[in-house]
Image (cartoon, rainbow, N blue to C red; front, side, top):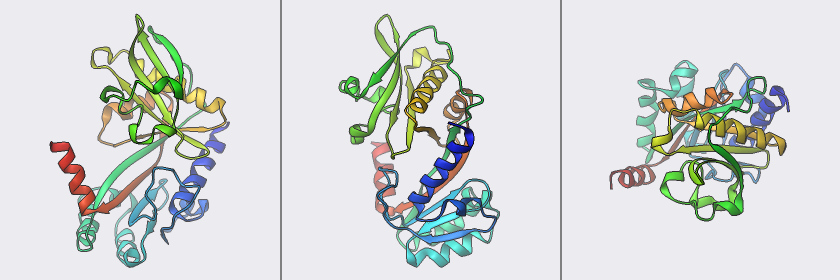
Length: 259
């Protein structure tokens, strides 16, 4: 698979997710569309969106509910695209959303592999390819990034690192849609900073490509450790997203994290 094919696959998937055309992400002007459910969208998305902004670096595509179209259009045409995803400008949108019972909730950067840089990396520990049936006993907190207990059926492939037979690190991927698998990685604290994360991430990406699927990687842009791992593993920034959710959902998530 070439970088061009990987890029085009991601654009098509974002189009399914946002209810727009793949070419809309390559325009120089912004696009606002009505969000609708789509059977080809990423399986964990709760569609239709209230408000979701996506940029591949050219413009912003906003997928929104009808009553927010004018609000979001006025916002994204007021500021440079990159500033719409950060403070202080972001507060302008959030203030309008709060009047309607919403808040900005998720902000993330997505990475795609560069096949000219992606390669298998060495690891001083034993690495094993894991299948879905191998994950049954691994849905525990230390592997919470590699695997998702709420969506076990999507966890389809992984690579584990073992020290004397004990699992010390795990990269897993979920079949988020028909063409793209998302990678997550966990390394036990005492084994970090040894290159294990990059070794597992890159190996899993290569295994995904063998299945004719596109691996992708997601991180909060403030998660420096995760972003560094993506870069070291042969991934490069591809697109960003910002999603609004109801105040009840945001407050519930904040409550969970403080308890």
